[in-house]
Amino acid sequence: GGIITQTPKFLIGQEGQKLTLKCQQNFNHDTMYWYRQDSGKGLRLIYYSITENDLQKGDLSEGYDASREKKSSFSLTVTSAQKNEMAVFLCASSPRGDTQYFGPGTRLLVL
Amino acid sequence: GDSVTQTEGPVTVSESESLIINCTYSATSIAYPNLFWYVRYPGEGLQLLLKVITAGQKGSSRGFEATYNKETTSFHLQKASVQESDSAVYYCALGSTGGNNKLTFGQGTVLSVIP
Image 1 (tube, each protein chain N blue to C red):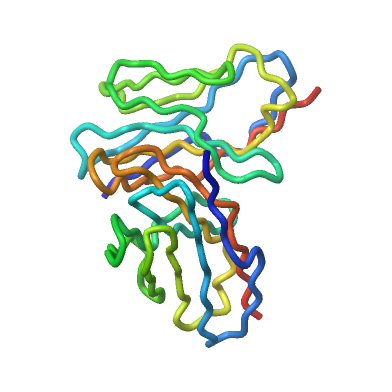
Image 2: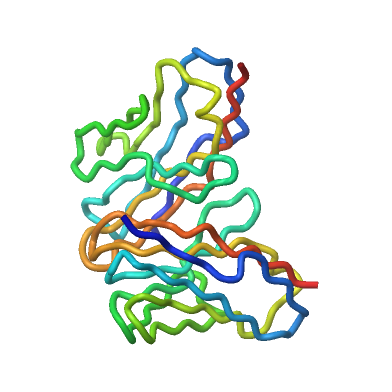
């Protein structure tokens, strides 16, 4: 088995701040994903990466950057935190074309 | 685009009662989508409950079942007799085959089982 680790678990930022969330997986999966979940809503895809150094935009990529410098890690940056960005960010990974496994999430609160 | 709609929650049922959580999908960009049910138990991360990749097939796990119905574009989750430990948030999702396997999720259904 493997595990997905997300850091930090909680992230408190100021409006306008640049914030970075990190994700590590030891499944040796090819594909990694970042989703955002707002309260009472489903997950929405922000970015995904099918291999090291690859980046693909999801439905919600505006306002975010991502980086996949190693196969095992995938970072997400909120380029300028907004007051209404209070959400849970979920990282996932999958073997190519197969089931996604999710991390525990990072809870973001912008003051 | 693709979309998934599921039963609005919260849903409350008594232990040993039957359960159905409806899920319908629209797959405009995927000819043969894969269908999934994910679950988040209290204090835990999102995890796969079951998946079906072929229309007409049924998936099952932990007493739950769901049948991939391409005619009605539905993938309803059912259980004959729920337990208190089934209390969780359930998400229906559809995904593409191939390299990226992007998932489109429903909004989630909160299930509370009363002992």
